Length: 491
Image (cartoon, rainbow, N blue to C red; front, side):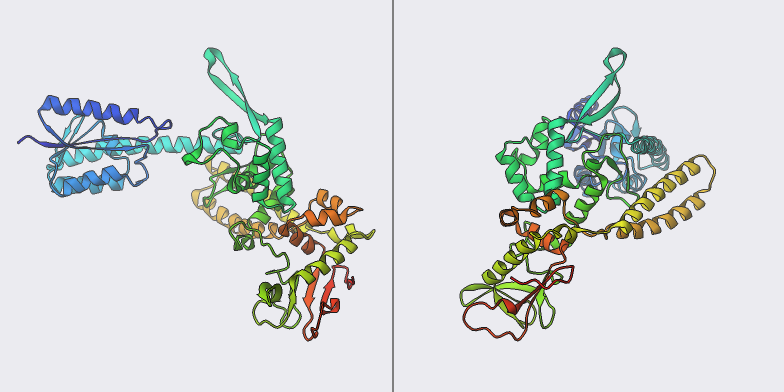
């Protein structure tokens, strides 16, 4: 019986998903097996998977299991680099294959007899050259990516809100590009940010964009729907647009990694940095994740700084009592008032307060400390980049680089927390609409989340007075309402 051969093929990147590189490797390997008179026992192929960092390769693992079980005598691969780029994987595989007496034949190479010390040594030396080549390439790619990031250049496809202007040289080769505002898309991005800042729910924004037949990002870019999803705006796609640092002319390098940096971008901003930071702070607030859509329907509940029990100062929740939705003390049930009566009182009091000439004074705020923290963050970001440049120029040692970087990053972590302490404010446009003659109609169109943030910005506080006797009807004095200016509000 001839040798039982396992053919293995792999490519690192298959951007178009055509698997042409894999098919070519399998075809040439089969031709070699046929010429040698061997028998193909199995074919294994991993498509679009890198081997440099030890990523899991299901077909590669299946082939090693076949070798361990004694089902194959030889592996045929196009090149040794198709099998291994990672030192640890290479060492482990050579040990396993030598123990199971499995040899290797390369289409573009030679035979490697792993049963002999010389064969194993030769395989290790060839593999080390492949690893070095991959590491050098990875280093060049990382260096180029950092240079692009520091220059503020875009990476990848053009983002929704901008369009790409290419500059071509001789032979039609692109030599440079710049991203400029796409008038219609930039207006949609600005609208999303401003509506989200006004605390309008992301679901409602998505529904409105779909109703107006605004093309979502993937459709606008001419790309195919992802994973069979419909070509419409969704809560997640609206949130993704709203959260982007790109909106304010910033770009992220090494997103989600320990050394993540937010750097100035060369493309024009659509909104201000202050708007973007405020919106990211709001959308990242863990309290918004208390329900599936991130927006509570009862705007006086679960926020003791707005509404609380007059006895234990605890949060309120809504339950049904005697067939009616009722605000009650969440933890102890100390107090309770019918929801419809309380909401009606709050509405009348708030509308009356917003109708006063000094209503705008309620929305004044001071986030100077947060702005100062953000400015210091910019300074430290610049210092970290300078440290890297100094190290590359051999002006400081690696130890000095790591020590200084660690110190700056400790300070940076604290500053990031301080920068997030900005008091959530209300967009000026919303204040302008609320303070005036049409307060009543505007208030009634707001969503619960919008009402809740407005009350917080106004310094609104409500207490269900403990010990106030009930009886028929509703007694307004059983609910105490105050604003930031310490006025006791009365109906």
